[in-house]
Image (cartoon, rainbow, N blue to C red; front, top):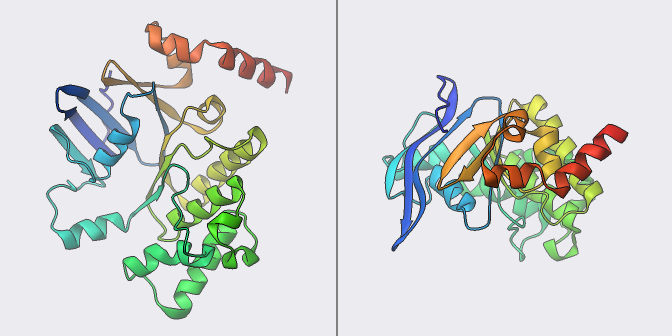
Length: 261
């Protein structure tokens, strides 16, 4: 439980404790992400997956423990250095979190302008490249979020996360509201981008298809800590909560579908 440490880790969260009043969400939890991995983070409702994500990102200081992100403690950095660190990270927030008053182009360009990472024609070039990377047509740039389908919204949000050419990509329930076909297409896109852009990915998901198809390792929050391993490790784990997740009807249906294919 939690003892996975390698020199090439891009995330080292050790002994993380998160408390809210009398409630303890995480209790000396460890999370490690190795360069080049796609790590699927799962857990039951209320287990604190999003809280842990914010902690790792340096947005919510833990009650105890330490965080190193790309070799740096985000909570110990001066503002200038924090901004430099965040330029190396891309985040796709739950539900896309696009700015409703901005069109697609300006949504994607927002990080470039916020961090002054590009100007003028360079912004246009980088936004166009990001749109192409996620498989959208160029004419989508003039649309507003209200005009987009769920799948398009996710791809625009992904383009915004990629436009800074990050080293680590954080995805929070990216396929949650998508239909099975759109979700499968999104998984294929993530796999393709990982190999093309040398990305390391932490993905919060409850989608078994995503875990099986693209994740190289799985981390499950159990008893306020983390159990990590391969899919096979999880299938063979005797913990009641883990067995319930990986041996339920959804997994049986998925296994039958994969065998039929």
